[in-house]
Length: 487
Ligand code: BES
Ligand code: MN
Ligand code: ZN
Image (cartoon, rainbow, N blue to C red):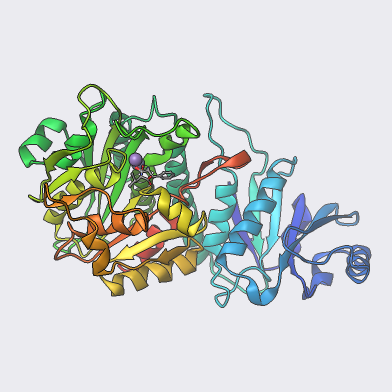
């Protein structure tokens, strides 16, 4: 879609629809400049009659006959509560509605919705509009969306160079989010570890600096990745660890992103109940978010070194599958008693973490749909955040607040580590009955000595259920902001 910027209301003459966000105080400055006198009076009457209260979800349209344009007011709720989360919801919601109409050219009055105080920006507006257009296409045809041009207008002036930068960044971010969504939504008979490694290779088209390497199972054997292989050996599909290197600057330690890429999680021999098991196709969402994030950053030509490492495998109960009670040796040398084969994410991740240490990362962040316990504890709004370094945790929280891609930090007290003790190996792969998201994170933490590491449990945030079932593309916006803010 084409974006333009206009300071005046003149451009609104040749658009189909003009959008104005209104808080519940129902104050719009200069409304008289945007609409004809009669429409202005009509809107004022609607306000006094309380037919439009400016609440979240409210919208109301007026035909401005003189200017031959439709005016659409949408509610922004309470001004003091307005933030990036509400912004994304409101802009996404209203754009989805408009897409369903025949509107070709839209103009948005940004006066009420964009301000640094509310932590909203033009980039975010463009990303939110682009995201609203996302649809998983299961047939080959391209979807035709009539909305072609969007004009963003306000009182203040932005120079053209700045504005084209905003468009570039907003679109690059939404491209990464859409890619992560597509990967998550692709059915598990197609989205296999091999498929993911090919998708990673395709990134090279975005930026020539990208280097993608696939570590095959033979190589993993020689590297001693017994934990990863314990998961992949139950499936016919070969497991793959894929590294995606984006190193635009010389000799600077990279930010390393690690992703859980279980393309389908049956639980293995500790098999899952069949209800909603299809959702376990989303168990590769961590890997999807790494691919999406690097796509966005490479398109933005960010000057920061980034390495993605995705651990891709199926978790199947084949005849070669790992048994509960098996003991394996991870690449780090730590031996693991596998008491539950459904706690497979931490097994593939611990070898990916150990392998990624060779990059001497400035920061390491892993993303994983790791535990149902995280979903039980935090619900579907924030991702669970864990870290062995509080400075890194705070930086992630800052990006979460800025983007509305929320996180909530949970503790990693010594007590949790005690739950991983066993008589038969160095550690076991599950903790006790309670605090499952934390004991899973504690397991990973065992492999992160000497590096600044954080873990995001995205079990509750990576996909939506119900009528909007599908991947959310989270936490791509959080990660892209983190990288852009810590160059
Ligand atoms: N992929 C699942 C976690 C999951 C379950 C995410 C449901 C989202 C929704 C993970 O591999 C898993 O099975 N975890 C187990 C761990 C347990 C065996 C210690 C879980 O959460 O039940
Ligand atoms: Mn599992
Ligand atoms: Zn899993």
